[in-house]
Length: 223
Image (cartoon, rainbow, N blue to C red):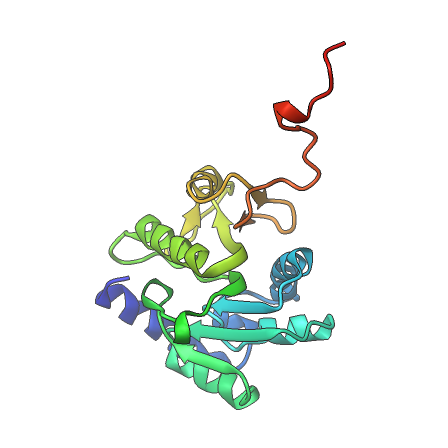
């Protein structure tokens, strides 16, 4: 993300924070508990792979941490964001968490750390002034994948819609699937949990559990 795009992005969220405070509306997520539907997609992946550590990219208020804890998760949560105001509120609410100002494309965890699961929710839905959304998404998700040990989970606004707000960026699910396919043979696209949104899950281990195919040398004699 270049300096102009970053400045626009930060100002958008700082302005919403001044207007709405700690609210889903500040994050542009609407009302009616939609954020919890999105968080549950992330939580399902955390549970599925048995993650003991999570990096939340664009963590905002660190509300995902609350959602995970409410479900009994007690792992290591870390968050990064580029919006100082959101981080200040998150740190006020969660002084014990490791929350840092950083762009995922340039983020270098201390001591070369990696994380079981790396997630990003609602991060890639604003149209960049430069028009470089696809390039920014690709760089970000590839960096997320490099930092994960088990899986990446990212959600997007879908192009399968009747209307697109001019300030929003809608990602083509087919393009996102190709992006994931360039990293792993084992991935999943969920377009079932909320209208007009989808999530891409990319696994580090590309061996499919319960694979019915066996190596040729393990096959029995021909009948």
